[in-house]
Image (cartoon, rainbow, N blue to C red):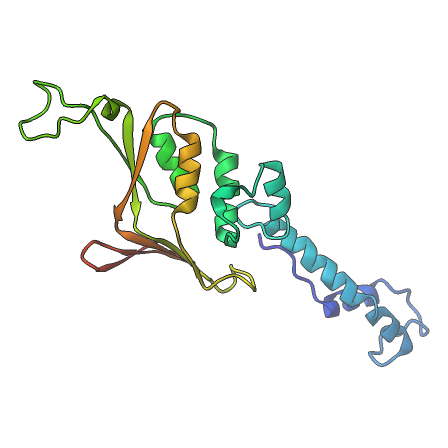
Length: 222
Protein backbone atom coordinates (compact mmCIF):
# COMPACT_ATOMS: atom_id res chain seq x y z
CA UNK A 1 0.00 0.00 0.00
CA UNK A 2 1.36 3.39 -1.00
CA UNK A 3 1.95 6.07 1.63
CA UNK A 4 -0.81 8.71 1.88
CA UNK A 5 -0.15 11.85 -0.09
CA UNK A 6 -2.84 14.35 0.87
CA UNK A 7 -2.81 17.88 -0.54
CA UNK A 8 -3.91 21.15 1.05
CA UNK A 9 -7.15 20.90 -0.94
CA UNK A 10 -7.82 17.45 0.54
CA UNK A 11 -7.42 18.79 4.05
CA UNK A 12 -9.66 21.76 3.30
CA UNK A 13 -12.45 19.40 2.25
CA UNK A 14 -11.97 17.44 5.48
CA UNK A 15 -12.20 20.62 7.57
CA UNK A 16 -15.33 21.65 5.69
CA UNK A 17 -16.85 18.24 6.40
CA UNK A 18 -16.23 18.67 10.15
CA UNK A 19 -17.73 22.14 10.43
CA UNK A 20 -21.04 22.42 12.32
CA UNK A 21 -24.18 22.61 10.21
CA UNK A 22 -25.95 25.92 9.70
CA UNK A 23 -26.03 29.03 7.54
CA UNK A 24 -23.16 30.59 9.49
CA UNK A 25 -20.83 27.69 8.70
CA UNK A 26 -20.83 28.02 4.93
CA UNK A 27 -18.45 26.27 2.52
CA UNK A 28 -18.05 29.19 0.15
CA UNK A 29 -14.47 29.18 -1.26
CA UNK A 30 -14.37 33.00 -1.10
CA UNK A 31 -15.58 33.34 2.49
CA UNK A 32 -13.38 34.62 5.32
CA UNK A 33 -14.01 31.35 7.13
CA UNK A 34 -12.58 29.32 4.24
CA UNK A 35 -9.57 31.64 3.95
CA UNK A 36 -8.83 31.13 7.65
CA UNK A 37 -9.02 27.34 7.25
CA UNK A 38 -6.82 27.57 4.15
CA UNK A 39 -4.12 29.07 6.31
CA UNK A 40 -3.80 25.77 8.19
CA UNK A 41 -4.01 23.26 5.34
CA UNK A 42 -0.52 23.90 3.79
CA UNK A 43 0.98 22.98 7.17
CA UNK A 44 -0.97 19.72 7.21
CA UNK A 45 0.22 18.98 3.67
CA UNK A 46 3.88 19.54 4.65
CA UNK A 47 3.54 17.35 7.75
CA UNK A 48 2.03 14.54 5.67
CA UNK A 49 4.87 14.78 3.16
CA UNK A 50 7.48 14.68 5.94
CA UNK A 51 5.79 11.67 7.56
CA UNK A 52 5.65 9.83 4.23
CA UNK A 53 9.32 10.62 3.60
CA UNK A 54 10.20 9.01 6.92
CA UNK A 55 9.02 5.65 5.51
CA UNK A 56 11.87 5.92 3.01
CA UNK A 57 14.43 7.72 5.14
CA UNK A 58 14.18 5.28 8.06
CA UNK A 59 15.76 2.44 6.03
CA UNK A 60 19.58 2.41 5.77
CA UNK A 61 19.67 1.62 2.06
CA UNK A 62 17.57 4.69 1.15
CA UNK A 63 18.24 7.04 4.06
CA UNK A 64 19.30 10.64 3.47
CA UNK A 65 18.34 12.92 6.34
CA UNK A 66 18.92 10.19 8.95
CA UNK A 67 22.15 8.98 7.35
CA UNK A 68 24.35 10.89 9.79
CA UNK A 69 22.56 9.21 12.70
CA UNK A 70 23.15 5.74 11.25
CA UNK A 71 26.82 6.58 10.64
CA UNK A 72 27.29 7.85 14.17
CA UNK A 73 25.84 4.61 15.55
CA UNK A 74 28.16 2.47 13.40
CA UNK A 75 31.37 4.46 13.82
CA UNK A 76 31.14 6.02 10.37
CA UNK A 77 32.30 7.83 8.34
CA UNK A 78 35.78 6.37 8.49
CA UNK A 79 38.95 6.93 6.41
CA UNK A 80 37.91 4.14 4.03
CA UNK A 81 35.46 6.40 2.21
CA UNK A 82 37.91 9.28 1.74
CA UNK A 83 37.25 12.97 2.30
CA UNK A 84 34.19 13.37 0.06
CA UNK A 85 32.34 10.06 -0.26
CA UNK A 86 29.23 9.95 -2.42
CA UNK A 87 25.81 9.37 -0.90
CA UNK A 88 25.66 5.84 -2.35
CA UNK A 89 29.05 4.95 -0.89
CA UNK A 90 27.93 6.13 2.54
CA UNK A 91 24.68 4.18 2.28
CA UNK A 92 26.52 1.05 1.12
CA UNK A 93 28.88 1.26 4.09
CA UNK A 94 26.01 1.62 6.55
CA UNK A 95 24.23 -1.42 5.08
CA UNK A 96 27.45 -3.43 5.03
CA UNK A 97 28.19 -2.65 8.69
CA UNK A 98 24.65 -3.50 9.77
CA UNK A 99 24.55 -6.81 7.90
CA UNK A 100 28.09 -7.85 8.77
CA UNK A 101 27.77 -10.70 11.26
CA UNK A 102 31.46 -11.62 11.09
CA UNK A 103 33.29 -14.47 9.44
CA UNK A 104 36.45 -15.51 7.61
CA UNK A 105 35.04 -17.67 4.82
CA UNK A 106 35.10 -16.92 1.11
CA UNK A 107 31.28 -16.48 0.96
CA UNK A 108 31.54 -13.96 3.83
CA UNK A 109 34.05 -11.74 2.04
CA UNK A 110 32.15 -11.93 -1.26
CA UNK A 111 28.89 -11.04 0.51
CA UNK A 112 30.54 -8.11 2.29
CA UNK A 113 31.99 -6.80 -0.99
CA UNK A 114 28.54 -7.06 -2.56
CA UNK A 115 27.01 -5.13 0.34
CA UNK A 116 29.56 -2.38 -0.30
CA UNK A 117 28.39 -2.24 -3.92
CA UNK A 118 31.20 -4.26 -5.55
CA UNK A 119 31.11 -7.43 -7.61
CA UNK A 120 33.94 -9.65 -6.35
CA UNK A 121 35.55 -13.07 -6.58
CA UNK A 122 38.10 -14.70 -4.29
CA UNK A 123 41.12 -16.78 -5.29
CA UNK A 124 43.33 -18.73 -2.91
CA UNK A 125 46.98 -19.76 -3.38
CA UNK A 126 49.19 -22.55 -2.10
CA UNK A 127 53.00 -23.09 -2.21
CA UNK A 128 54.36 -25.54 -4.73
CA UNK A 129 54.06 -29.11 -3.51
CA UNK A 130 55.63 -32.09 -5.27
CA UNK A 131 52.88 -34.38 -6.45
CA UNK A 132 50.19 -31.73 -6.13
CA UNK A 133 51.20 -29.14 -8.75
CA UNK A 134 52.19 -29.59 -12.38
CA UNK A 135 55.60 -28.91 -13.86
CA UNK A 136 55.99 -25.28 -14.84
CA UNK A 137 54.07 -23.92 -11.86
CA UNK A 138 55.73 -21.18 -9.82
CA UNK A 139 57.57 -22.51 -6.79
CA UNK A 140 56.54 -19.55 -4.65
CA UNK A 141 57.31 -19.39 -0.94
CA UNK A 142 55.71 -20.22 2.38
CA UNK A 143 53.87 -16.88 2.23
CA UNK A 144 51.61 -18.27 -0.49
CA UNK A 145 50.03 -20.56 2.11
CA UNK A 146 48.59 -17.43 3.72
CA UNK A 147 47.88 -15.37 0.59
CA UNK A 148 44.55 -14.81 -1.11
CA UNK A 149 43.33 -12.53 -3.85
CA UNK A 150 40.20 -10.46 -4.29
CA UNK A 151 39.16 -9.84 -7.90
CA UNK A 152 36.83 -6.99 -8.81
CA UNK A 153 35.94 -4.88 -11.87
CA UNK A 154 38.46 -2.27 -12.91
CA UNK A 155 35.88 0.40 -12.11
CA UNK A 156 32.58 0.11 -10.27
CA UNK A 157 30.60 3.15 -11.40
CA UNK A 158 27.51 4.56 -9.74
CA UNK A 159 25.59 7.12 -11.79
CA UNK A 160 23.25 9.89 -10.63
CA UNK A 161 19.67 8.62 -10.92
CA UNK A 162 16.65 10.90 -11.17
CA UNK A 163 14.13 10.33 -8.32
CA UNK A 164 16.75 8.38 -6.33
CA UNK A 165 19.75 10.69 -6.07
CA UNK A 166 19.78 14.11 -4.42
CA UNK A 167 20.78 17.61 -5.43
CA UNK A 168 24.50 18.18 -4.93
CA UNK A 169 25.55 14.60 -5.72
CA UNK A 170 28.09 14.01 -8.50
CA UNK A 171 26.76 12.70 -11.82
CA UNK A 172 29.04 9.68 -11.46
CA UNK A 173 31.24 8.21 -8.75
CA UNK A 174 33.78 5.40 -8.97
CA UNK A 175 36.84 3.96 -7.28
CA UNK A 176 37.90 0.94 -5.26
CA UNK A 177 39.35 2.63 -2.17
CA UNK A 178 36.39 1.66 0.02
CA UNK A 179 36.62 -1.99 -1.02
CA UNK A 180 40.36 -2.21 -0.31
CA UNK A 181 40.16 -0.38 3.02
CA UNK A 182 37.22 -2.44 4.32
CA UNK A 183 38.76 -5.75 3.26
CA UNK A 184 42.14 -4.92 4.76
CA UNK A 185 40.38 -4.29 8.07
CA UNK A 186 38.39 -7.53 7.94
CA UNK A 187 40.97 -9.98 6.60
CA UNK A 188 42.48 -12.49 9.02
CA UNK A 189 45.57 -10.94 10.59
CA UNK A 190 47.93 -13.73 9.49
CA UNK A 191 46.97 -13.49 5.81
CA UNK A 192 48.27 -11.45 2.90
CA UNK A 193 45.56 -9.94 0.72
CA UNK A 194 46.18 -8.98 -2.91
CA UNK A 195 43.77 -7.04 -5.11
CA UNK A 196 43.37 -7.42 -8.85
CA UNK A 197 40.94 -5.60 -11.10
CA UNK A 198 40.12 -7.49 -14.25
CA UNK A 199 36.47 -8.49 -13.96
CA UNK A 200 33.92 -6.97 -16.38
CA UNK A 201 32.93 -3.41 -15.47
CA UNK A 202 29.52 -3.15 -13.80
CA UNK A 203 27.58 0.09 -13.91
CA UNK A 204 24.83 0.53 -11.30
CA UNK A 205 21.61 1.78 -12.92
CA UNK A 206 18.25 2.69 -11.36
CA UNK A 207 16.50 -0.40 -12.77
CA UNK A 208 19.30 -2.88 -13.28
CA UNK A 209 23.02 -3.32 -13.98
CA UNK A 210 24.85 -2.51 -17.19
CA UNK A 211 27.79 -4.87 -17.65
CA UNK A 212 30.68 -4.21 -20.03
CA UNK A 213 32.40 -7.53 -20.62
CA UNK A 214 36.04 -8.13 -21.50
CA UNK A 215 35.31 -7.74 -25.22
CA UNK A 216 33.61 -4.37 -24.75
CA UNK A 217 30.08 -5.72 -25.24
CA UNK A 218 27.19 -4.32 -23.22
CA UNK A 219 24.97 -6.67 -21.27
CA UNK A 220 21.89 -5.35 -19.48
CA UNK A 221 20.66 -7.40 -16.51
CA UNK A 222 17.87 -6.55 -14.11
